[in-house]
Image (cartoon, rainbow, N blue to C red; front, side, top):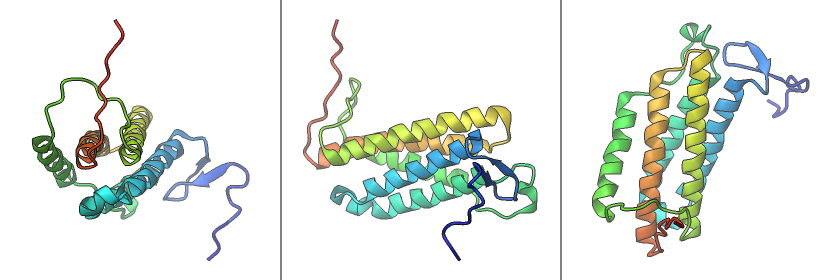
Length: 183
């Protein structure tokens, strides 16, 4: 099988189910952003500080492929196909991880500026891309069916990534830089 098909040379692509849409379609932008997020999660997973979390981050990447498949499926044809599912337990897992991290870091008393260590900065970028993906999914939901669990999962994932930034900062003995507004 060749990597290139030439079917997109005129600016269209196929959804799962065969429906062709423009590559600028909101659905394509949405699952493309989830793919971008998945790449950043891979970068975060590859950081030495996250060796002990590599399995969880890999599982998150798997869930993001599920989210991408869901978003790439033509909602009109979704009932006729089998795609992977997202479950409430996937959200609960993120919540449990957030709670574990929260117990280990000092209480948050101010906004945190991204940075402090390159590994933490990578995680903040992933968090921001996750929020963008969430916004796009909500926008897509306004015009087409999108499972509400997708929004919930992305929302919780961005919270998890923020918590991960905090614990990474602590484990790397980096400075957590708080925002001190000029007033």
